[in-house]
Length: 453
Image (tube, rainbow, N blue to C red; front, side, top):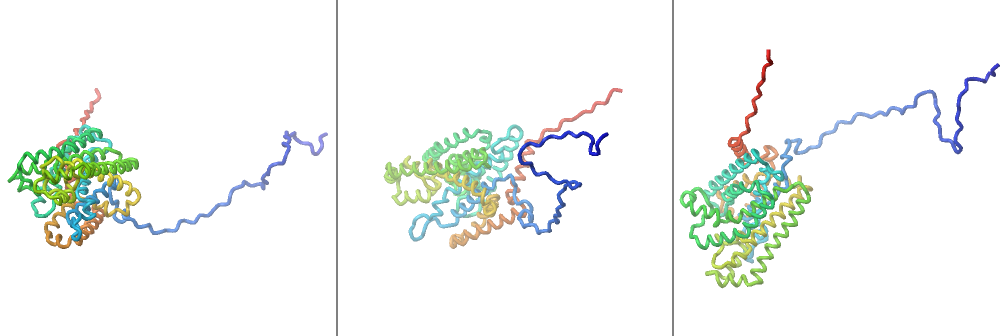
């Protein structure tokens, strides 16, 4: 007979020696954490921003550092045109003149080359039909800018206009759109070395009239003289200023969103600027260049030579001696001047690409102005033509007035409409021209075959 305590046999295991772990006490219900009450979030007012108020302010694919550089070039050109170049008490060039005279226009030209690269594929150049269409659009842009420049030069203003040369440089850059970076730099080196020599001997051997600002009147009345002015005799001669375009296209073929690219532009730009200044200083100040200029240039005193070094030539450089090719001054277009201006342009582009990484919103007015430089530059020339006497009388007031109005208009217009007025017209025309002359291929016709019955 089984005992009352007997029951089914249950196998047990002996516990391991040592302190036993803490065992939970079962109270007959499944353990579960108590529910946590989370109140719904209280409605809060959304933070104001330009994008919420006006919509996206600019194309997110646009590199704002380049627009900031264009804005600086525009302000530099206005400063050169409006502010006095020298101090009335000392007779020496002002700090602003020394900083931007010749260099602001060179920065414009280098950025023109960057634009050529961007519209043809940036660091991944187009090919085939897409490249042909981009070249047609670029040619249309060049013709439009050339026509705008020739038309605006019919007005009377005492400054040199870059637009006709600008359009011609765009046109000459079209064959270079398919070149590699090394080829572009080789072309730039050729223009830097041989361009000044070509200008020197052309001006020495050919007698022609240099047009102050080429326009339609001079083009039809003096076609040969106007063409020579655009190529070799003007303020921005094609055979030397194409070096800026070549360097700009090469820069545009780099990845401009990389910080390493920005740093390289700053370092190499500073090196080129130093090389150009050092080369001219050695030749003119220490190897007898100034004395040669003084002895062999007819009608020039020492002060006249210094004026050319400080303010640039009146027209083109004298051709009495080859030593003039060693000077370095605003718009002298010598090898030393080209190296210095290219280096400073590279430095400015690299620096502004870095700065806009951190201070993009703070620099918004400058970026907005740089996104519509054609509109603002044409407006500046028209205002100068209409109020030339007042501008010459009150240059500082007019400078700040034009700068403030330009950045305020550009900021408001970009927030409201986006692209600048002239920029929108030019872009629309160029895009239409590209599709007219290089249309899309016809879609293949799909023929449906009926099943045999």
